[in-house]
Image 1 (cartoon, rainbow, N blue to C red):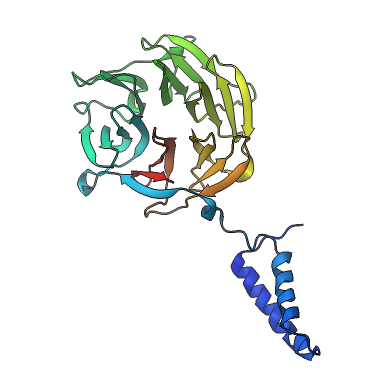
Image 2 (cartoon, rainbow, N blue to C red):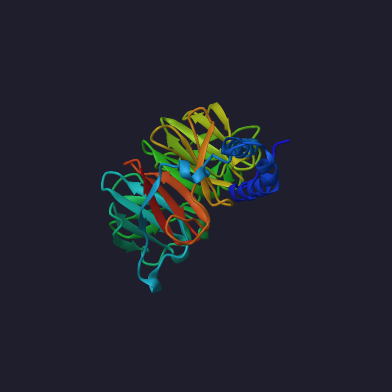
Length: 325
């Protein structure tokens, strides 16, 4: 059986042993500080992990900046998603609580607040395919809506797949194709810009479906929350590989692939991020619960921007924080 103690507990335990054995050591003829040091080393070695720093210390990521609305009366209420426009170097935040979108530059300065004439109904996620418009998931009317930016007009669309209603959740795009997570089934569906169904991503041994996904390296990577796995699909819908996350995570809600091919899993319950290498081996975790800079309350999404920075949407703290290394 392996016993795990905190560093403080080990130190206290060590001092107790030292005090109890001090008389014996004094009685030892010429039993010197050498034996005393050996005794302490034995205590440290007996309790594994005393020399191992906390997992947070192993992280190369450091806090860099925050995206938020500084005016208290107009602050974000419930940000749920982030989209990055690489060409224009802009960050877009979906503020579900105030039914609007906010744009920021790379330095974290607020540029614009857009609510489409107060026509949005609980927006949740968004993507841009071109400069003419935005596709946005509206939970309030179960719609994958199109926003015509020139006219500032919202066009709702009800999705179906195999003649069944789709409940849009997470949204991604690649090469002009829209990928939509169906909240009702947990499956991921692909559509043309005309909203014609194209493909379907699911796994037979994943009955509860997926909670998040990203397109990376011409593959679709999907997070299975209940099974604590990451499934990798070809863009044709074929399952290629499965990564087991194990008990390192408790309640994974979002997933991202780092520039080096490492997997980053956002754990909403533990309020941290677990990192796995290319082989699916756990490497370290970082961040913790809190309400100050670099801490999490109720995080909802992570993604990497085109410049290799890690972006974290914190719904509970009503902000998006950016980390680099």
